[in-house]
Image (cartoon, rainbow, N blue to C red; front, side):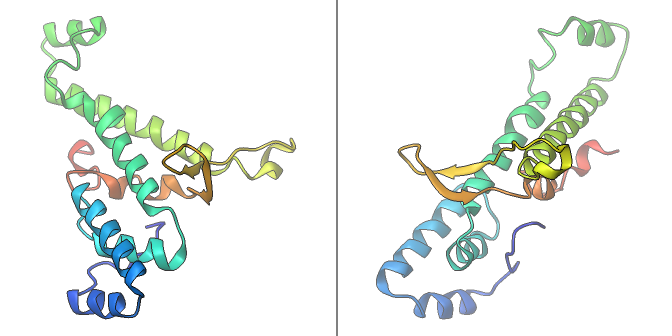
Length: 173
């Protein structure tokens, strides 16, 4: 996993860490933990603690990667996913298994998203291309202004953001 989170931290450890913070820090940590848990993070306290202690944009990272799973990857399992695709309609009419088509579409979408994230992650390495230009994915504040905290290593955590909790295993067989 690309993020430095201690998985499965006990509630006693969480409480001890909270107690080490001032009142503002405790409130921020609890609020962040609640936001992660509301978004479906199993280990919301771990994500929150890492974001606060390491000053890493884990909430933005979580939101981006989870939205990629729910959008371009997961949307293929919707009831009307193939309605506007003539090629898919022809395959279904010829007897293709719809579940197999869903898996195929999800794998292709996953690979495309992963390759895109990998390219975004390597964008600041201007030495790879030899051209003195690059890019950076950065967290933004509520008003849209950059926070200065980069979202890096996104491709490393894509599988772990599968909302099913199965790390993409459903479409690899």
